[in-house]
Structures are given as C-alpha cells and as structure tokens.
Length: 249
Picture (spheres, rainbow, N blue to C red):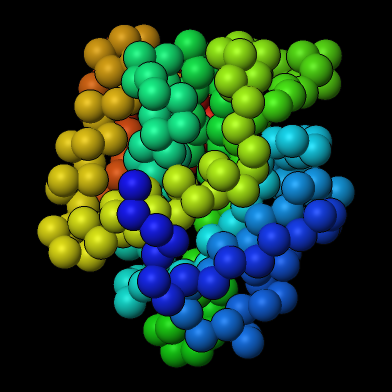
C-alpha cells in the first residue's frame, strides 16, 4: 500500500463531540482535503439525525473535500466512500467474502451492519461547495441490540465477529489511501466504473427488499443502481426509481 495521500491533512483527537462537526468548524481555515479522526465521539450522528454510537476502539472519522461538482454529483461520493471502506477492510483483514455494500450508505459484515456513511454539503459561495463525509466502523465493539431501531440490521464488529483487532489510526491510513484512489477514478472516468464496481460488491441484487418512506412502504426486487445512483426497485405495480429511503433486506 502506498503512503498517506499527498496534500491531504490529518487531524487526530482523543475525544471530540463529532468529527463531522469538527470538519465543519475547520472548513473555513482548511484549503485542501483533510481527515479528522477521534478515538471517542460524544455526540456522533447518523442519517436523519439519528445518534451514532461510537465507543473507544471503534472508528469515527470525517473527510473534508472540495470537488468541483454540483450537489447531485457530490452525493455520488457515498459510493466512492463505500468502495474505499470495502478496500480498507479487505486490506486490514485479508478477506473479501464477509463484506458487502448496502444501498445507500452501509457496509455489511456477514449480513449485519458494520459501517455507515453520512454526507453533508457546506455552501461556501455561489456554486461552490465543500463536502464532509462522515464514516463510522465498528472495529472493536457493537451497539446493544435493545438500543437499536425496529428493523435495524444486526450490528457487527471486526473484533467480536472476526476476531481481528485493528486500531482506528491504522484503519484510517488504509481508508485514506483507498478513498484517494477511488476519488481519482471518479474524477478521471466518471461514475460508470464506480457504479460497476459498487454493484459487484452489493448486497441483495435481484432479491426482495423493502423501501420505507415517511408516508409509504414499497416492496419489490432490487434490480440495480442507475447512472445517477438511484436504486431501481421492481414492485408489483411498476418500476420505482428511489433516490432516498430506508432499505430493509
């Protein structure tokens, strides 16, 4: 593996409220890309403001970047981050078969949730945006099941479920390299090869899934992900193009 990506900052904290909050705070004074890692978060959050448990020993980090892209193109970085996570996990464990990617932003270990991704944009001026990519990985421990939402996937951790101990900063070094490589591919070749690589690692392609929205539930077959990153769901009534939903496998 090559060394730390050139021109990318690295900030490591013992304890912090949230690496995403720190990335937002540091954005005005940070010209290029930067990773923010904390060994403990006291106020981490996931999608739709849900709390993200982050005990010591687990991985909690955020990447601040400024690609020249519109917000819809910035959102494609969830696929880039997922592929980077997959590669970092393979690099650190030496195994591929336990890991799969779940639309839109999770990484699975033997069918349970191992990692999550959260994206936030920061408007910095007319047609100028920064992007913060928050990533949490259960390296050492997993949340208690009685504290999870109904229908949540069973949580997994590398230590409990694979017997592998990885330090957060070691994992960050692997992840930063992998992310830089996939980001370069996206900027060079567009989304098509990213989409192809993501689908090759995806969970439940061709199988039944359930999409839950605030006002409805749609059941169908997960057909593919289209060129915009939307999930294509074949239901009994018609084919649905889903850009945001909670997906149950």
